[in-house]
Image (cartoon, rainbow, N blue to C red; front, side, top):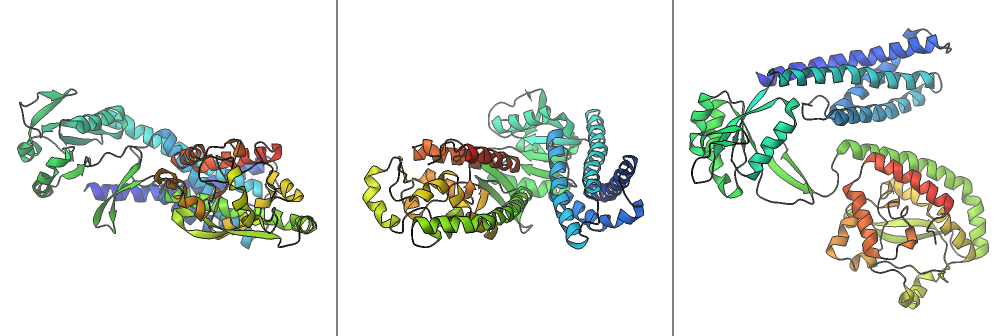
Length: 470
């Protein structure tokens, strides 16, 4: 019954959302008309909804806004809704201007996105607030029985107390460990021992049983699962087998069949990664256009500085050890790689990276394009191919990776970038490789699309000021 109810609510939400998006276009047109914009009749713009409605629906689903959002904070919900409109706006705008050119007012389209966000946010937030108030008043709640009385069980209960708006009410605890039966845990009664599970569930209104038992007792859960299945009670488990505080955990079903616990040190948010890739493609196209405009001047200057090829390619290590060919405008003499061995003793960096001040292998114009980062413009081709990202970690050479300590290797668990936290934090003023790795790991652990955008703006500032360049 609960599943049927959830399905009905989801279908209702879909229809309401599509109606609100339609209303947003009508309101945007009305506001545009009141501002004396030269717009046709509203019916001439309703075709925009043909691509808009399915795209909006896709990203609303992708962001999980048709699943239960009772555990989302208001900020998390609005962030997800903003992501929906950012992604949907980009996709629909591209479709419109590919097939209709400039026939649609850009101001009207931007106003449509704005009103869609505001109207969806208002009605969804009002609904969320109303539901949470109702849950706090005892309506639409789920009764939880916690099996376990140790730290994990107490922490689980604490989370439910801190988030009363979720509508999850603890009816009591069951003691698993031996010893005298406790009277209560954090104000909730201990209703018996593990062997009393079925009797307690029959005596009290229990919607869900949450096992927070120690790992060495989980082997006894199998029989309880069968009994609870017969009673029609939902079972959840707080996994207590491993303690890995430095990584993210994710529990899911593989192919809707095998339960898989995943420990990962980088984001697996498909939506965020999709938006990052879209940003990379747009940025790469703009970067390649700029490269094409500057190419004749750069080519002439390089040829006058030193005879040899215009571009320099080198094998670099990408995501998870994948090898790729990284491209740059050549800034060094042709024999630079051979001369590197002679200069190894002068390396000013500590660790698996090579840098020296006033490198004699760099020809005069090479110094200019390195200080202005012009030499890295061809890497936009690597970004477009998906081998690199606009923002990431510096792509190392295989020789450098061979010298890595184990903890260094996490920096190559993501795509390398044209720019990154190291480049905007002093670049060559940092002479300790371990410090570079710490900056890279900080970026990986705190990554978000907004963080990438901030680093791109900081990169522009650093390039223009030439801070820390060499």
